[in-house]
Each structure stands twice: as structure tokens, then as C-alpha cells.
Image (cartoon, rainbow, N blue to C red; front, side, top):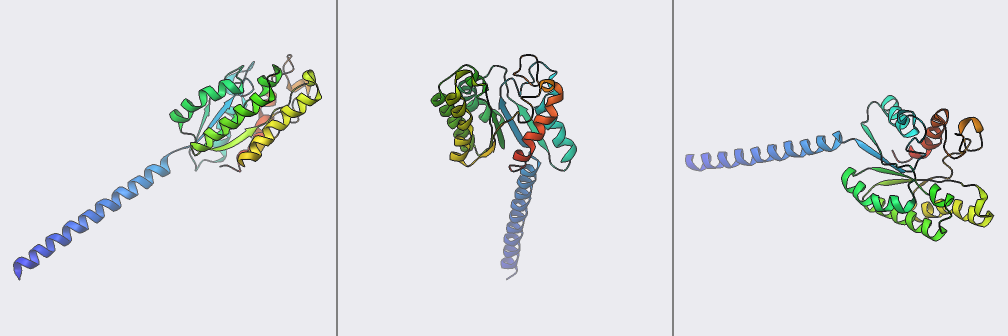
Amino acid sequence: MLLYFKHFTRQVTKHCLLAITLCAFTLSCWAAEAAKPVSIMVLGDSISAAFGIAREDGWVNLLDQHLINDHPDTDYKVINASISGETTGGGLSRLPKLLANHKPNIVIIELGGNDGLRGYPIKTLRGNLDQMVSLSKQANARVLVAGMQIPPNYGPRYTQQFYDSFGKIAQKYDTALLPFLLEGIALSPGLMQKDGIHPTAPAQPLILQNVLPHLKELL
């Protein structure tokens, strides 16, 4: 009986230690998961790359500062993957590696303006946007599509189809949509650089204000 009791005690102790170890491991995993920052990746062109102004004055950097100041209890990480002159085709070619390297929780797609200014086919624009949103969602990222408008250089039909492209893709994938990133900015001379395409430093906080209501849906 004594030997049986000792054996039983050892078995109970072993199982208790195993349970404690498993609980500790589970809690450590939960803690590690909770400690991961919420990462927001901006895939854009010169407007998000702060063309013509100091990079720290750009709206993407202002977003980073806003999240730090207004959400001190949450660790956010903003990744600016924007390149001046980028097209939807260029963004699409870079996106798989960016998703693999950064594993963003949220992807803001701010591309298409250069496609429109160069008169690229609407079918190409929409196809590239479609694939970028699809790839992002497959990587379990939430998506915000930032739309753009262009001057009517290629006629009203092209201009309207260009503008409609962003909404159509966002609707197809049920993603957040900012219809026009430069709303309230593009036609204000004091807020645009001399080229009439790129916003000035004073315009950057206004761009951020355009982005935030739509981004908050995803945070």
C-alpha cells in the first residue's frame, strides 16, 4: 500500500508539473502575441513618399506620430513602403516580398495616380489594384484603398473610369475606401507645389485628416 501511495503521488506530481508548464507556456505565448505591434504598411507613390518636402513632414510620418500620441496604450508600427514615381504595376511586383518581410496587419494602398497621369489602360490599373488587394487579404491584412483623381487630359470618359476604379475594387473585396486622398487639397494653390501634382508640407496634416476616419475602421 505504501509503495502504491508513493507511485500515485509521483504520478500526480508529474501531471501537475506538466499542467503548470503547459499553462506557463500558453500564458507566455499570449503575452508574446499581445506584445506584437499593430503594423500599418503604406504602399504608395510620391504623395506618400513626401516628394519635395522633408520626409518627417510627410503624412505617413505624421500618422506615426499621431498613433504614438493619441494611442499610448497600443504599440503601432508604421512602415512606409512608398516610392516616388511608383505605379500599380511596380507596387504589385514589390508587394509579395513586403508582405512576407513585414507581415502587416493593415495595408494602405495609395497607388494609381501615376498610371492615370501616363494614360495607362484602365483594365491594367484595375487588374493591378485587384491583385494587390487580393494578396493583402490573403496575407490576413486589412486593407484601405486610397483613391485618386486626375486632370481630364485623356478625356472625361477615361477620367471617370479612372476615378471609379478604386471604388469598384474596394466594393469587390469589401475593403475600406477613401474616395479621394487629396479631397479639399488638390484645388488649393497654397496646398500644392508648383507642379500642381504634389502637396506641400502644410497640406500633410490635412491628408492625414482625410485618412484617419477610414483607417480607424480597421484599427
